[in-house]
Image 1 (cartoon, rainbow, N blue to C red):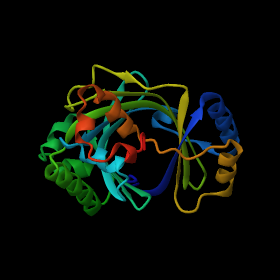
Image 2: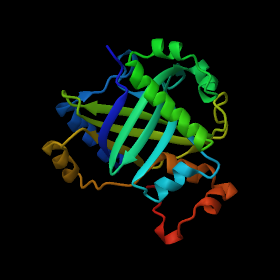
Image 3: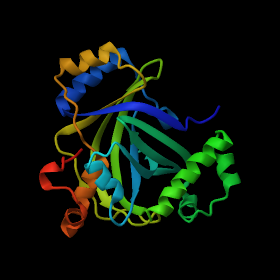
Image 4: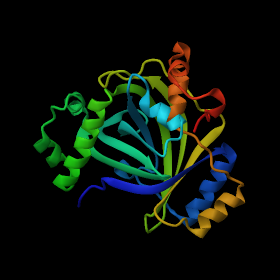
Length: 262
């Protein structure tokens, strides 16, 4: 079986208070299936390392709500104590409101070789159960962007996740909490100074392929949930780089045009 390497879907975020999130999850337990993660666990911990340029190209384009924008990250999953050695290298693009995500797997020890564009492609192909042309296309696009924009690690984002999906697997709903950020400038060393961003809200996200089902519209209306423009990446950059004023210096838009936490 080939690994799913491409995703094209509509994504919407909602900030939900904890009590309401518990109620919604209880309803979803009756309607959907719990998403199973590694070893059949119904929850997981996620740690992502995001890349950007010295002038924070990805951040600025997101804040300006450019119709075509992208992010590159390396993502790991874990059990709350350790993170697994398998990583996912992902490029996530938003084009006219639709999210396109493509990815492949690497071993953690290959990270430096990936950044240096010195990874053994045959090993990479053997490690990924996917079409060679598809893997080559994703790999070369990521390498091209890393090189052209001189991108490097800038941010670590971590959180706890629970998720649901329907039997057709065309709708997924995730619940993220325990969100934290840290500056990360290398792949070999995780952030030592962590900024907690837990608050009293749960980040609920709906991810759908095609038309949104009626029951999801009903659920959102039942709890009066309105779509929020919230980006973990942008919020993290604003949080951890605030003391240096680097974001304020680089961001070119007028203050009233900047939408916080898009």
